[in-house]
Image (cartoon, rainbow, N blue to C red; front, side):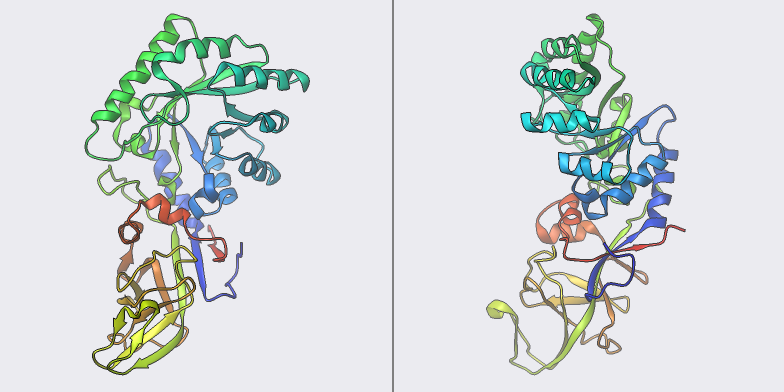
Length: 377
């Protein structure tokens, strides 16, 4: 990842100073006793896992969370020595790596708990673990009405330390909270059963970003937030926090300018035909880089004005109509995501074009796009 101007005329730009402001705002917004887990999986949704993790730790994150062991090892290799939580299930082959590198992982069944305990004993260590309770997402974890025996078994397994119990919302960021409230109730039932059986854990956590924003009754000890300090909301209807701004922009330069004559066709599939003289520009970026595969849809910003995408964009190129922007010249900057002057293309606009969610758009920018980090001071 580059800290300087990229050689390729298309890049992702990350504003580190704004990220710091976002963390400050988030920490100020949350209740004082409430801790947080900095989720940095998938390169922190394309923003740069190590840099986001370092900032989260600086602002008091209890854990840094990832999904793969490789991600966790990358953090360790970059001198992140504090608690790292690895979501999901671990294969038997991964258990030794987790113990050797002091990674906190999930054990959601008795058999895997025993495997992990055996590895920890062999290495002369004790392994901290969390148990996930499935309250309705039907993905990872032990079903809520079967959770107590598993929790008891894990707590009683020598070599393991039951440090946390968690659940995950299926839909926390929409206006209808009916199912989220039902999940919360199920999790509360598990916690009450644990209390009755004198099972104590240090951390209880259920909320993702949507839950943090809209379900304060489910905050418990920790909330898990990945997208919020990046200045992006999980939906367009959840609570807003004044001052948060996106830190990612995607930009490209006008690599070619062409003058079209009436009847000229543009792009694969001949999806656009000029009916009058038009001026178009070619950007060397396309769906191979993560931009939605569109045909005569979407716009980019050039000189603070919207230039419509024409034709079908390709894996490595897209064409935009700059007829109404006569001042546009070769190698001018175009913004595909982010602000230019008073105009903005936000992630939800691209998500609508792509028929997906904001997370997918952010994480979808490919590694071949250079990352340029603006200074944090």
